[in-house]
Length: 164
Image 1 (cartoon, rainbow, N blue to C red):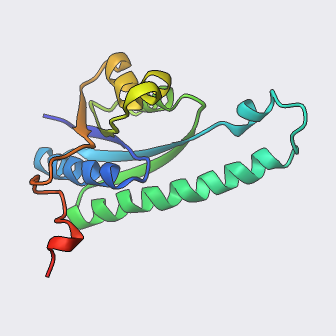
Image 2 (cartoon, rainbow, N blue to C red):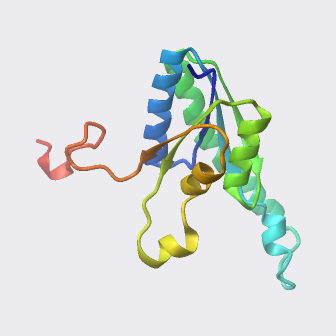
Image 3 (cartoon, rainbow, N blue to C red):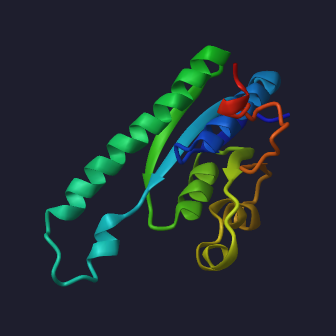
């Protein structure tokens, strides 16, 4: 069925649950996985500001790479636990959806597995969703796990007050 699955991560709990499910699918299909995290291109973001410290983009990029490595460590550990072949990539792009789609094309992936955060109101209009952008632009199937789940969903932890 699927041979190579791309799994973007933003390090959130919802993303981690989508990755766990994606690895279950990869194991069933005998597919390999590439995990990816996209860091912003701080040079492009800050170049427009004439009063910025020229060393700041480098510092921010270093911090973003360290964060990306920690997010991708979860992907590597999940792959090892499931016995699935996996590699990871840190991409830099001011448009995460572009980096996700470009990586999928360059690595000949045949499925993208990701999560979608549900934003509401004006934030949804202004920011949109990377998952929606990937879904509408990708030439391969995209499996999107919704971030919002009902309280009785098996992946949802019981409220702390209910534990005894």
